[in-house]
Length: 141
Image (cartoon, rainbow, N blue to C red; front, side, top):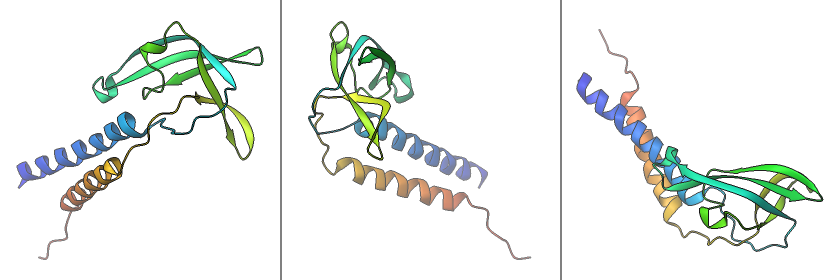
């Protein structure tokens, strides 16, 4: 019984990790709209994001807008090594209609089909099922 509980616990952890992996690789920082350019990212440096086993790039840059420089960090391949050495058009994000100090690349990234939400539902269901199986039950005496 204890061995089975360990396997179920590993299943839950694996499913939750797979959900995070799918979000970072397929969903995070994804925007399909092409917009006008507000700023440019310069001094781009990139390395593999090992949180997702190297399937995505983690990049840092300086975003210059109105003569001011803002630090920018991307953990899900919004910028890639192909952007190193060239200014990348960026857009300033808004919150409640007001500009923030957050930016996103101005280029359009393709929208994903229904695969990622379905994968999330399957992995989430498996994690929930495993968590329910691990929940301690009252035993009658």
